[in-house]
Image 1 (cartoon, rainbow, N blue to C red):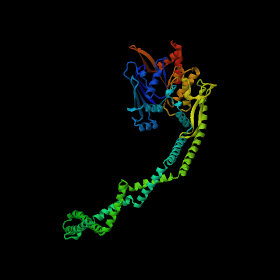
Image 2: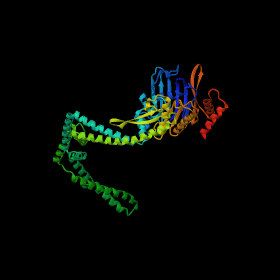
Image 3: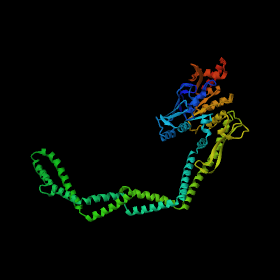
Image 4: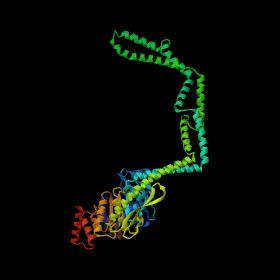
Length: 554
């Protein structure tokens, strides 16, 4: 949700810092006070096209900043990370600077961002209803996603997309084979030759380790034998050997221990040393017994190693990586082998296409049922929003071929009044009707709608009385699941809000500036009384306003 909005030198706003809360908030004030400027500023910071006219007269630049709470939006966190725009956990800071010449710069979490990135971020965070420039429900992709979410069809839609991607890959493989059959055949022959050569080498990583160890041992056999014998002579077989002297010393001290038990500790240290020396003698004898000079075996190993090195040089790789080279050649050969039969490729493509179409047909059937339910519920909601006799339809237009989105495109159609033919929602002329249509759709689909902040402008255009009360109740109900803001001239709508902001226009030093004030209970009574009574506010209108707020708070 939107936490705060900071505006500097934008239109008739010189300086404004606003903090927002959850629930339903209304912005009220006299016509021309600048209520829509706040919405324009928010749309601007989220990627709306900038014009020089938005910079306040005489200012060096206009600057708008917004902070959003995104703690529960895992999808947005992934998007920010993928675009290297992540910031503090749970928060997203957006900033836009507009110069008098019309140039602008955008930032997301302090990092420069393109206009496209600002727009994509805005589509995930805020939905502005009543202005076509920034309303997700007028976009076909958003309509399709909303229908699928409403019907719980997102997993099926994802499955169709995956199967479509698999089919397209099969199709591309078949086309590539038809187009590049000669090159593919040449590559296959080369890989077959490589595979035969590497298989003939009969070489593995473990064998490489054993060969290098054996080669080192045989190449230095004479030195190893000499060293082992020197060790045996020094320890046990030579004159005055270490083991003999240590054994004699242990025996002598053991005899003397009878005269002084204090020698026991020294003996306890020497005895293990004597045992260790004896074990070393056994190991050296065993090792020396295995050593032999074998020039013939050494020559065989060197010949084998040279063959391995020769192949490794040919493939420009390390000897120990040759098995990986063989595995890669086999894998690619298997891929080409599977694709070597054009008829086989066509069958695989056809099978992938059939699987995609079968899943898409299931999705189509489910969409048809969901479209009927959604159409009926939104049409019912329209009857209470000054669009009696109007109807809403979710049109499913059959596609010539299955796409990543299924066998049909989704389009929201609306007839605002009885006798009118349904037209695409995106082409509804009246801003008020479009805003109320959006309210009806959002109310029906609030359980599954993804955008956290909803803003309604012109939702009260052309309505009053009972319908205005219904609109107020619907907005308040919607505010339980989303952050909802509404610009309104109707006291019935304003009285339903959880928070109320008053926008006023004043003149200071010859300049017109807009100011926003958060109203307390007493101020709300005055503002709603003004909305009820016009220029002259009487005790009766104040009482009526208080009753409206009292009813709301009961």
